[in-house]
Image (cartoon, rainbow, N blue to C red; front, side, top):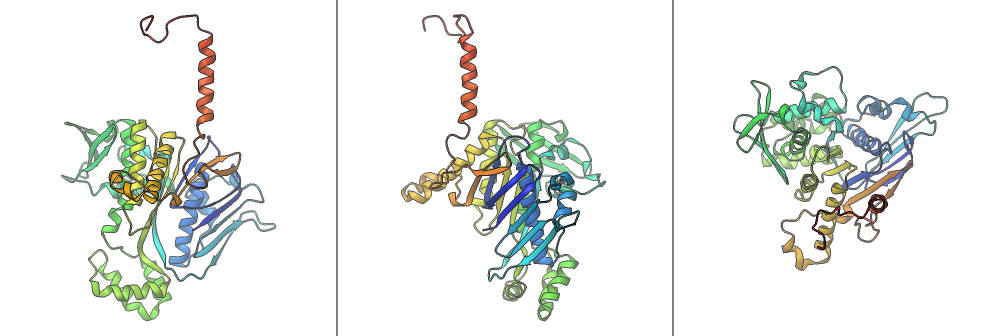
Amino acid sequence: MPSITIRYVGPLKEVHLEIKRINVFMGPQSTGKSTIAKIISQALWAEKKFITMGEEYDFYQGLLDFHNMDKNYFSNPDAEIVYESPWCVISMKYETGKRTPKTVYEKKKNKELYRNAKIEYIPAERNFVASIANISKYAETYNSTVGFLHDWHAAKSSYQRRNNFEVDLPDLSFSYRYKESEERDIIRVADNEVALQAGSSGQQSLLPLLLVSEAVMVSVYHTERNYSPDEIRHMKKLAPDLAYTVDELAERGKKTRIKTMEKRRNELWEKLGYQADYGCTHLIVEEPEQNLYPSTQRGLLKHLVSYLSQDTKHQHTLIITTHSPYILYALNNCILAGLVEEKNSAAIEKLSDTTRINPAEVGLWLLKNGKIESLQHSDTSLLTQDFFNIEFQKNHEEMFQLLKLLPNENITGKPEGK
């Protein structure tokens, strides 16, 4: 299981955690939720480049350029990031007398193949891709937000003419299609058809998130990968005796590869130490609850978890940053359903319509005062029940104090004596 250690980066002072299949980061504003999500995303990307391309990516510069992190986040000379997985160790820290941190890579011996991953970062600023017409023409710079814009444009091109994308969540159902000839995004609610730019804030926030998630978690695995020229050169460098197999795989591209190639392909993967085809997706989502009603938030969380629970072939992962108790408690119910499945085999039939996840695969984290703590019970992995109680209690105490200041009046609206 991979792990990440972060010291003195932005608001984070001392953070260490094992990265599980699902990780949710909670906490007040400016406590480092997005910071840690960006760093993990960058670590996954750096690992991918190192193992599949042999590139020692500049971790520090990548955080500045792609994730828009400010240099002041790294002003402390003790700033350090260490990512460790079964395949490599990536460390970023200052050397004596140097003005910028240095990234060091160390490859680890592992008989298990590394699964090439599709990495998708869905930023909190995603609404703008749906609210501004012709935004896909923007090419001023490239960062996580613009990267998501490109992925949105690529994903929606699949939904033209009669091929609609259906959104069906609690209290929010509509269909979507893209009129490429007019570069128009159209949504239909009941019998009404309107431009997405005129839709509700919830529709504008939810649709890009769901559409891109569907593309990277499901659709991408329905076709074979097209390898880039750099990937092909790197594979031939590592396995020159299997260059013919590399060429044959590359030539077929998206065409269905015949079964007789599977043996040679697997032989190539063993030689490389990794599989070049995508083996899983790492999905990172900032604030999925944006502009959504509580019931829709719960439905969305279960929908995202179902990508992992229903796909046993690919070991997808999910990272979420959130302020929402509805997101947190909906995931807790998924953990509870997984616990029921684990402890009570007689109840499995009753769980047929329930989204569930293995409790051991989930991490619920609270970021506060520069540190991190688990929100889960050590035995069951369920959410500690008092997490939001303090805030609820404060609200109720204030309400009771205000009620005491009222004269003896009927404020319930009920008839006297009832």
